[in-house]
Amino acid sequence: MDDINPAKDNVKYVESAIDLTLQELPLPEELRHLDRGAIHALDKKVTKRLDMTLLPVVVLLFLLNILDRNNIANAKTVACQKLCISPMSNTTIV
Image (cartoon, rainbow, N blue to C red; front, side, top):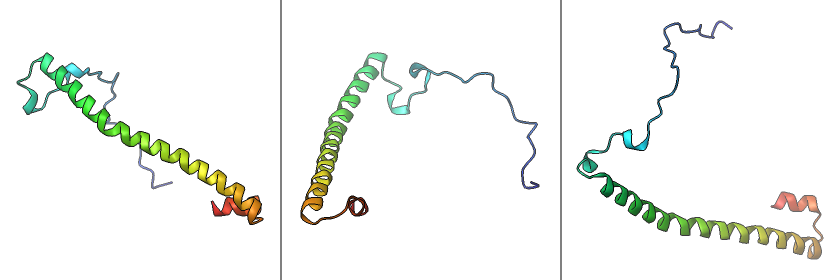
């Protein structure tokens, strides 16, 4: 119990968290010369590019996950019928 540090008296208490909106955040140096419309257009362009890059990968992973689940179910059925493997052994195999 001696290893526990005592409470710190010099910690500053914060009444509420600072709520910054996107417009109040500082911009990087490369974007400071752009107006609001250009920043909004750039934001839409970047969002679309990310969506077109990430969405096909996520869909492919989702489909592979479904195929893998079906393979496990089929393997369980075949193993129980042909190889006479008990359900407990099947759980160990999977």
